[in-house]
Image 1 (cartoon, each protein chain N blue to C red):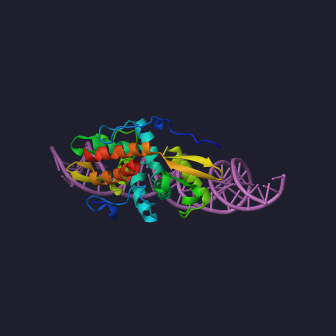
Image 2: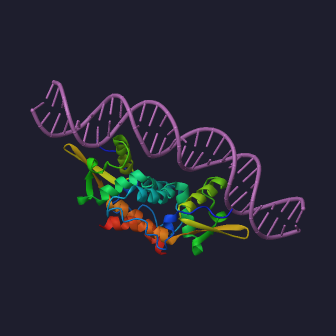
Image 3: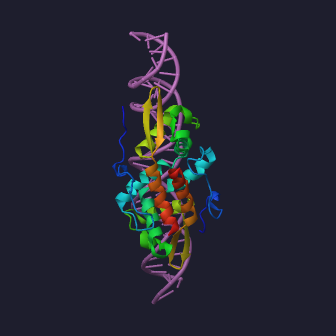
Length: 120
Length: 120
DNA sequence: TGTCTATGTTGACGGCTGTCGAATCAGGTG
DNA sequence: CACCTGATTCGACAGCCGTCAACATAGACA
C-alpha cells in the first residue's frame, strides 16, 4: 500500500490550523481537528516512537532503529500509522527499510498553539 | 472535597518535565508523564473547555460561562476534572460558583517540548 | 430549617483503542 | 524461482474512555 490518508487541515505549508488556545474559544470543528494531533501524542508508546524519530540523526529513522519500545512489532507499526494519519510523521520506503520523518511545520503549529497561549 | 490529586512532575515552578522531543529518545517514564498532558488535550470537548477558560477575561472562567459545548453538565464536570488531574487547570470555589484557571507554566513546558523540537 | 441553584460524583452503557499472534506484502539475495 | 528479512494488515480480545441520567454535595437565601 501506499499512502495512508492525511488530514487535509495540515496541507498548507505552515499549517496555521487554529488560533492560539487563549485567543478565543475554539469552534467544534477546530477542536476536532486539533484534538487529533494532541491525541496522537497522548500515548506513551507513540511519544517514545515520535521522540526516537525526531532525535535520530538526519531527522529520520528506520523502523528497525526505533522499534525497541517494549511492544510487539505490529503494535509499533500500528502506532506509526496513527502518527502518520495525524500528520506528525511521513514515511518513505527505500529498499528493504521504511524510513519515518517528522513534519516540522505541524510540530511548530502545535507548539505555537501552546506557547502563544502561555505567554499571554 | 477539595483537591484532586496533582501530577507530582508538575510541581516545580517552571515545570521542566522533559527534554525537547528531538534531543534524545524519551524514556518510558518521561513518555508516561508527558503523554498524560497531551492526552488531556486530545479530546475535542476538553480542548474547547480549555480554550474557553484560557481565552476568558482574567484568565479564569466560571463553569457556567463555558459549559455550552454540546454535552451534558456532568460530562463537562468530568472533563474539567481530567484537565485538572493533568495539571493544566486549577479550580477554586468562590461562593456559589467554581472558577477554573489555566496553569501557564505547564502550557509553556508543553510548548517548549514542541517548538524546540520544531526549530532544530 | 428548608429550598433553590450551581457543581461534582456515581453507576452503567457503548464505542474506541492498545495489544497480540497469525497471515500477508515488499524487496533483496541466491 | 525459492527463501529470508523487514514491515504492514487482519482478526480478535481486554481495558479504557466519553457519555448520560440519577443522585449527592456546597453554598446562598429566606
